[in-house]
Image (cartoon, rainbow, N blue to C red; front, side, top):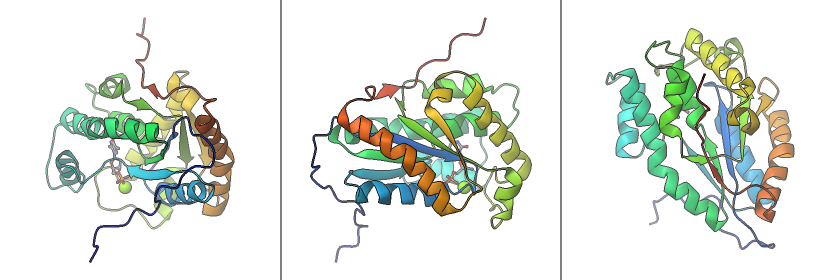
Length: 240
Ligand code: NYM
Ligand code: MG
């Protein structure tokens, strides 16, 4: 018997030539509705004739991912920098695969990426772990074509069934995380160009409709070859 989980989106031959797939990231606080929106977006893309794969970070299945899982579940303790670098390594171990899928014509929809990496670590207020420091190990990773930021205040997130037991799932931490996410959007660097804010306080259906209106255009342009080439995360300019 085939016990391996079946690919929910098996390859379908595209009707038009596809220059490449798109790289779409969905970001937000815990309980912002990322899992639901990734699912809906993938379903919409696939129904519209695009090839798609959903992934998430942290990917808890790899050896590095298992170390991260142990930390998040409070089974192990780690230095703030060490766990930060493991989160980054967990993305690097998937980077070549992401590029390969995109070049084959799959659109990748990714639940969390280095934006979470930066802001969750920087939200710890460790004076030796700035936002700039946190970003550095991710420089060079594939750069998303668009980042959907699901904006929700921490109080509303908490009302949605409450936070769980994992590390970081505390109101004060989530409030700092949200401020840092919003800060990235107004900083004027590449994150401000890539990230787009959606009001996650609305119904799941309305949020999904708003996301679709934007992302269907992006994926269409990418596949048609009228978007930029797949980029890589660049350095922030040195502060003077
Ligand atoms: N997280 C996630 C980080 O601290 N750094 C990262 O680089 C990433 C990708 O892991 N509270 C945090 C945010 C979440 C936690 O993620 C687990 P999820 O999506 O709840 O499994
Ligand atoms: Mg979580």
